[in-house]
Every structure is written in C-alpha cells, then in structure tokens.
Length: 446
Image (cartoon, rainbow, N blue to C red; front, top):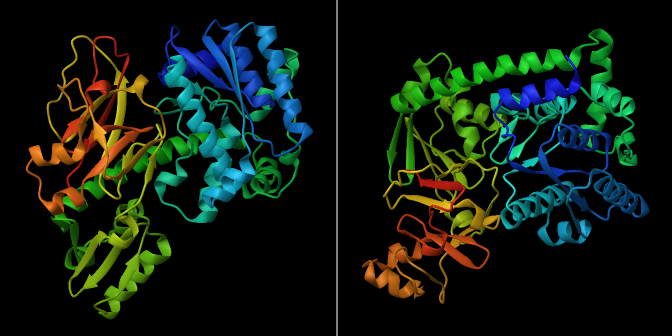
C-alpha cells in the first residue's frame, strides 16, 4: 500500500482528526516533520506550520527556520514562528534544556491552537521513536505504562506517522524531492535517546531487519496486558485499600495472600511517584516486620504502621505549590485528584451540574493552566453573574470556615481564575452554543 494511503488509513483507524479539522503541524525542518507536512498538504488536509527556534545551535538553528519559511511559501499555507532563549529559560526554571524546550514548545503550540482556532497539533513521531522510548523507559525503570510507548493520540496532540519506520520516511522524502535539514546533534550520542538510536537499536536490526515493526506489534500486545493489569489493580484497590480522608490504608494481610502483590503494589504506587526499588524496600520492611518505616514519592509519603501501609500527601511539598497543567495531561494526583478530558461539543449537550465538575470552553483557555492556592485580592466572575466578585466575599457567601479557605485551590488560565475548584466556575469560561470543544475537569474523591 502506498505511503500516503497508509497514513490516511492510520489517521482514520485511530480517529486522529477529521478531514475538515484545522491542524497545526509542528515542523522543525527535519526529515520527519517535513515529510508529514508534505503528505498532509498533498492529501488536502487543512494545515498550518508551527516552528520553534530554540537558539541552541546558532546559525544552524536559523538555517532550520529559513528552510521552514521557504516550505511555507512553496505550499502556500500559514506559518507561525517563535524564538526562545532556551538555556536562560532552563536556568530560571531549574530544569534540563530538553525539559525546558518541551515545556516551551507545547505551551506555545497550545496557545496558538486556542488563539488561532486549530483543533489539533500534529507531531512527527515515527515507529523508530516508539522503540527508542521503550528502551529509554526500560533503562530508567518503569511499569507497563512506560513500556507501551508513544500513543497515536494524547488529548489534542496527534502523531500520524507512528506507523512508519524512519527508513520508509526517508524513502518517501527522497522519492518526492522533499527539502529537509539534518540536525547535527542527532549524530552525537550526548543524550541517552541518541545513544539508544545510534548504538543499541542497530544491533537489534542486525538480528531482525524488521525490528521496528516487530516492536510495534510487541507494544500493541503490551497495551492489552496493561489493560488487564489496570483492571486487576482496580480490583486490588477495591479489596485491599480503605480511604480515610486524605489517607489511603493498604492492608498488609491482603498483600501477603495475593501472589501478584509486588506487581500490583508497584503499578498502584507508581502513580504517586514511587519506583521499583522503593517497592522492594517496602516488601523488605513487611517481611522483617519493621513498623514505622517511611518511603517518599513525589509529594506523597508511605508509612508502615503495624499491619497497614498508610499513603498520605506530604504537606510540606504541596501546601503552597504552583502546578502547571498542560493539555495532554489526563489526571493529577497531587495536590488534589483531578481528571481531565475534552471532547467535541454536541447539540444539545448534557451539562453535568455538579460542583465537583467544571465544563469549560476549551478554545478560551490558555495553557498551561495553573493550579494554586487562593491569594488576597483574587477575584472572578461566578457562574450566573456578569460582574466580578472578590473571592474573599465569595467565601463569606459560601459560609466557608478558615480551614476551608486555607485549603481552597484555584484553577487559573493566565491571570483569570476559571474554577474555584469544587465550588464554582467563572461565567466567562462556561460552554455555550458557540463552543467547539468542551474541556471537562472532575475533582475526584481523595
């Protein structure tokens, strides 16, 4: 089957986007992204270019941008361009350059989608990237979720080239005279992913030339296993875990009689930032009968108390934090449990009238959203009202105690409070008949 037909078939099978959807294509100038752009344009999809210049490779970065601008003229489509001082941004945020670049580009992509009314962001990950991610996660230590690779669709981010090994992409690009630039850093094994790409995977290909396709099949099977394990974890939760306020009490007796207890506990606690070596330490504590042992995840503490493992938030880590929420996030565990989803608006749309659920107009939001505690001077437009109201006055109307006010979280878009979490949304962000996409946030029970 021709490359172009396989791509359109993949888009349809995974319901990545419809023919009439406006799609923003992230184009770096490399062979993957320029090939993706070429195919989508020639197949008649409504696309535009988004290019980030991270200012990391001097003239080479500028050359990438110029190539993309030339492609924009050739295809006669819209293009959006931005330049970042990535090293400075990373230093300020205290994160790696790679993490800073990822945060910056996805934040900008989503802002563009909101402001310019694009429905999806197309990223040019391919089948080789799936295999590389598998091994990268394997070396770092991971559960099944980390081994199932990159998903074709995560929120508004779509990956139409996941079906294709890089070799096929190169063949298509060369056969169709597509212009592209090679990132010189790809030939260096400075980063872990590059070392896997350049040194590890070629050895597997010597054994199996169709290694990448085999990995896709393996990962598809692992995804089925992941679904099964998820169901078993849910059963384990119902049987062995009791929720008491902000605490979760895990029965050690139930762990002892479950033959898969180590796997189930890891799959469950990995969501709270615990790794496999910590789970080993937990079981050593159980076997030795050591009470009072503590283990620390990301914002959570696990305490061994006689015949119970008690999981609870680490208050010193989360009490005053600011938490960024990107559009590809599906859930949040700390500081509070939230679930995120979005879907096309239908008419009539059944609005869930629960204070624990916020249904917002996706196109009006500016990502990343920020979850933070309320501050003096905060105000918003309560649903059903036209004017603004100070949160301090809203709290009085709600007859909230001092403790409730001190523990109140706000979800913010830019400088606007869009949801007083668990109480009221902002009227300006409610859905209407003109809403194209609904962003639903649910506050889950602790």
